[in-house]
Length: 140
Image 1 (cartoon, rainbow, N blue to C red):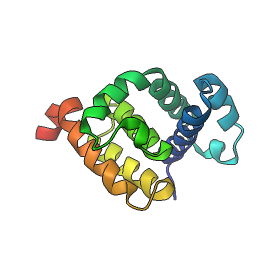
Image 2 (image 1 turned 60 degrees about the vertical axis):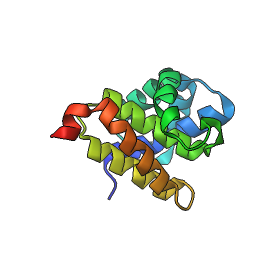
Image 3 (image 1 turned 180 degrees about the horizontal axis):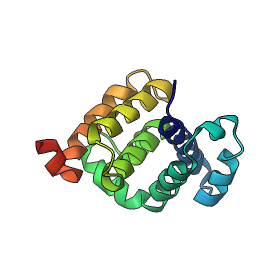
Image 4 (image 1 turned 45 degrees about the horizontal axis):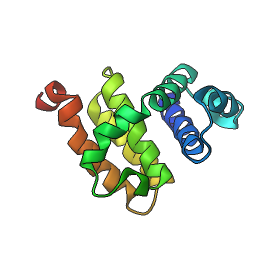
């Protein structure tokens, strides 16, 4: 059984995928996704925060992620890039959610929507991001 937050992340990822491919704005994507069947089971407020926040701060999030990659950001699949942006946004801005939960959710998204070993790649990159964004929590 998927939690409302998991569904919010899935919808936000769909929005980020469409945003990367089509360049639509967050508000338009948000209203499109709000019409999907699974939207009623999602945390609508959290979904909006994730989608708008990730798109708004994409450039700064990419600057955080890029040095941790073994290739150029543009060479990542749109799914993995979307997951990394989403998780980086959560690590930076949703400090009420433990970093291990954020990483686990990103891994699950990558298993469901990404390439064959995409979840391992996502895990490795996010693991390197935690000390930078959540140093106190990592030590604890």
